[in-house]
Image (cartoon, rainbow, N blue to C red):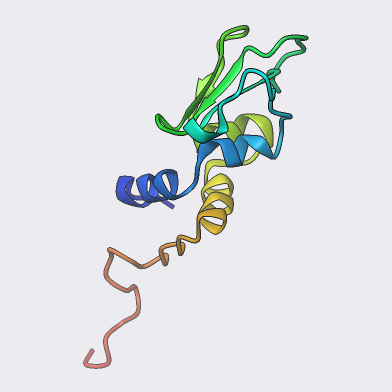
Length: 116
């Protein structure tokens, strides 16, 4: 299934990336600034002792300055939780309260008309 950019952007706008990432990391209280949506943690993708993993709500992205991984909400769940893209979209849409589009939205129905 193909998702529209508008639909994916709505999920990103409604759901802070720190909420998505926060289910998989422990935020560093000394370095993070929750009021600004500027959060730091040890990277969930490689072992490290000091937090070099950054999630930024304003930009809607994460980046590790140690190993170089970066991405958005969807990429995080694909890489960290091993989900497919459609699975990540469905989970994040649910978290954001955005209804999933129907399989036929934007297309004509495959059902034959009654007049045929």
